[in-house]
Image 1: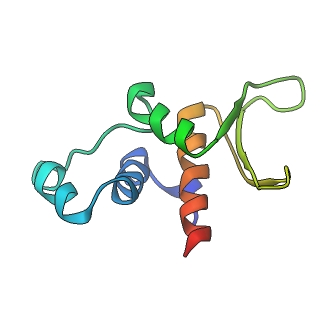
Image 2: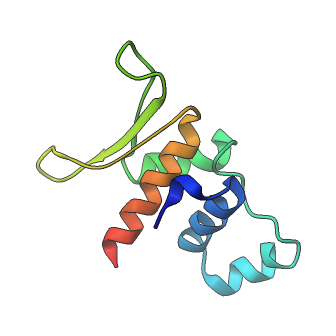
Length: 102
């Protein structure tokens, strides 16, 4: 899936789908169409980032965007995303992880 082309709302909804039971999600968020703002709110995003071991690296002289990644069991980077907003990049990595589980 091309996460770079998705809006924040679309990414937030996809993250919420993986984070909550579908019935619970529909009951609590679906009616209003509002889900947690994982792409912009650290209080929503941090539990996902922490639980799944996603690392964030600030922009540097090599890249002017944030880099977020996850290492596999032997230390190799298994999923990586870059974006000017670190939480959005982290949520893209999370969705990549969930895609790989399928």
